[in-house]
Length: 121
Image (tube, rainbow, N blue to C red; front, side):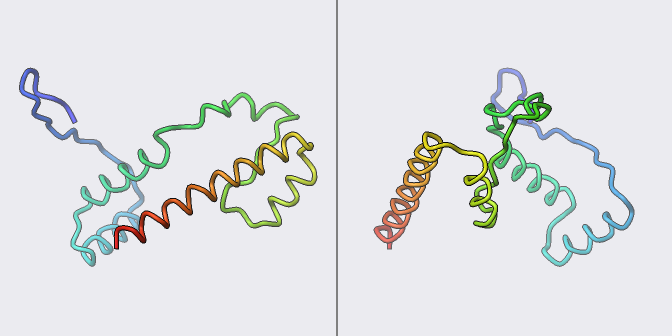
């Protein structure tokens, strides 16, 4: 949004998207069913994209993917077989320890979240 100078008031900015005819028709059909305009659906999609990708990944720069020795870890929710293959073929004892600590930290965050949910009830 653009701010009106000196007022603190925000004015929405318009953008244009290019979609296939069938995509537009399907979008309008779904929007009608959910009582949303195409604009509202677009804005929601943009907000979700910003939320999911806003922090970026400073650890891996695009030029690292050209390095033949670069080893990308499986995504968090990848099947366990992918994790097993990655760990067995790509990590040493020091990296295994780091992964183990990270996993324990994640488990701690989940347990804390569950505890907070139970305490709110």
